[in-house]
Every structure is written in C-alpha cells, then in structure tokens.
Length: 425
Image (tube, rainbow, N blue to C red; front, side, top):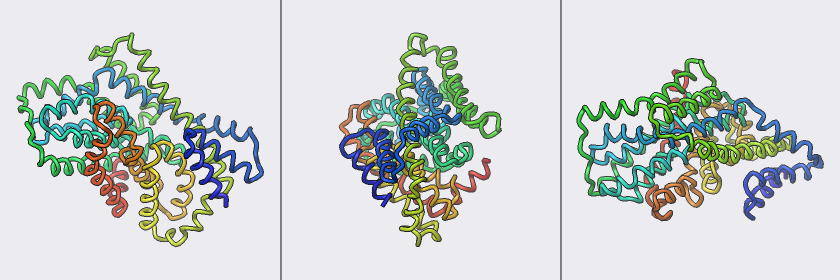
C-alpha cells in the first residue's frame, strides 16, 4: 500500500503542475502522514543533510566551467578543429558535430550547454551546405546527450551521491559507452545523409590544419588534465571541477581573450541559477529517499519482481524499459533522484555491479532528453536554431534508435562496460 501512496502522491502532484522538487517534498509528507510519523524536523534535517556533501561541490564548478568554456571561445575552437579534420568528407559536418560533442562532453558534462553551442554554430553552416535541417538538428540533439555519459558528468555525481557509488569509478566506466554512442551516431548519420545533395567543405591544407590545431590546443588540453588527474589519483572529481573552472577562466580571459571581465557577473549568474535548480532538487529528493527506505518500498517492489531477481539480464531489460518510459515524461535529474533509491536495493540483491548499472541508468536517462513529449534537449535545439519542435523531433528518430540499440547492446554484453572500466581503473 505504501508504494501506491508514494506513486499516487508524486504523480498526482506533478499532474496538476507542481514543480518536481515540491512534488518530491509533497510525496514525502504524504508518506510521513500515512505512516503516522509526521515531523517537520525530519524534512528540514534530510534536506540540509542531502546537500551537505563535499562531492556535490563538483556540480556548481562543472556548470561554471561549461559557461566559461562557451563564453571564452573554447567551444568554437573545438568545432573549428573538428571542421579542419573531417569537414571535407561527404557528410563531414555531421561527423564534425559528433566529434565536437564528444570532446565538449569531456569538458562540461552539460547536455543543454553543449547542444546550444553546437546548434548555434553548426546548424547555419549545415543549412548553407545543403543538409536536411531538421535531421541536422536531430543529430546535434542526439550528440548533445553524450555529455552526461562521458566524464566529467554531473549526472554521475548526482547518481553517485544518491546511490553511494564511487564517482571516480562511474567516470572511468562511462568513457567507452560514451564513445560507442558517438560511433553509433556516425553510422546512423552516414546512412541517412546519402539522401541529401550536400556540398562538402574544401579540404583544409596541412598548414591550416596545424594552425587550427594550435589555436584549439588549450581547449583540447582541458579533458586531458581533468581525466588524467582523476585517473592518476591526483584529483578527486570535486577537485577536478574546481581545476576545470579555473582553467576555463584562465584560457578564456588570458589566452583567447574573448571573455571580458565585464561578462563575468552574467556568466556566474547563469551558472548559479542552474546550480540552484539542481541542488534544490537533490535536497528535496533526499527527503523522499529517506522515507522510501523507512517505508520499505524497495522490499515491496522486490515482491512484485521476485522471479527476475535470479535472472539479472531480464531484470536489466525490464528496468531499462521502465526508465525509457519514465524518461519520456521526466527530466534527467528528477528521474535519477526518484528512481535511484527505489532501484538500488533491487540491483544489489540481484548481484548486478552498481557501477555497471549506474552507467546504463544514466545513459537511459540521457536518451530521455531527446524523447518526446518533454525532450529538454530537443527544445534547446528548436529554440537556438529556430526550427519547429515537431521537425526536430522527426529528425532525431534515426539517432534515437541508434543510441537505444547501443543501450540494449550493453545490457546483452555487460563486459563492454566492465572490461574497459577495469582496464582504466
């Protein structure tokens, strides 16, 4: 019965338009009332304790690093580097979009920020070259959602805190699946682009390639510093976030000189607004998470899916389908915060590696960013590139299918995640 109370109160609040964070608090209050243990101190204590974590400091600094990267010219130089490398190939601008998305993902970890930067620069170029614009927008949206999978990933940080799983291990385990998603997008793009009568860019001479690479070297060095520092044990993910923000600030203001001191207050304000939304969600979710444990809801769910506990692969398939469905209606962070405390006890009881599950869970939630009707990243592309949302949604389907196939491939072959992760660790 507690499971029904939890679901009805949460979904009921969201259905009448209550923001997700307040819906989480509301369902927590309803559970407390139902279990006859209502106490406002429990709400306050869990909200404060939920965000009073050193690890969560990484979130504001990675968000700030992403804002500084876009304002300081790092994103544009990464795209210029990709154009110089592969822009002359037929369909090359699409490969540029994916290549740039993977590189930028290893710097900012924000799907919306990366997608906005890519769409603003590349879609006008792709339209001029004769590419199908809605499909190009769909590709950029699908490339943008690689950001939560390749480290540094804010989604991994939130999941790691909620599930008590090593964030460093999650970071290293996400590298190969993220690259695999990029490869799947390139294959899907090269298949679909054959219908377009496109004009490839002229091949850049070697001297120009070297010049562009030199200009982008500072930007390309950022993921090397972050990931190298984490893997070598020099930095924790939180310390890496601070280094990333300081590095982006230094490069944008001193090296590239595109970030002016007068722009810093606006950059910091944008980062603060995004941070406040995420951190309030985390605080509210910890209330419902504590009550989910107190109400023994995971044990109640185990009773329903007990036949699958001894069959981990079937259990993973069932959970992935559930998360795909939930992802069509909820954004990335709320889905992580709502489902993690419910699913983790089941995962542990089934003997599934928590790091492996975390990678697939975040990948699945990321795919939800490009699934209608919500599709946050689709809305970003639509707004930045001024393409009707319906057309972007139609254009994203080949790439959505490709990324979903990769997800289920990883369910069938867990070693594709576990073996590279062990090697990197």
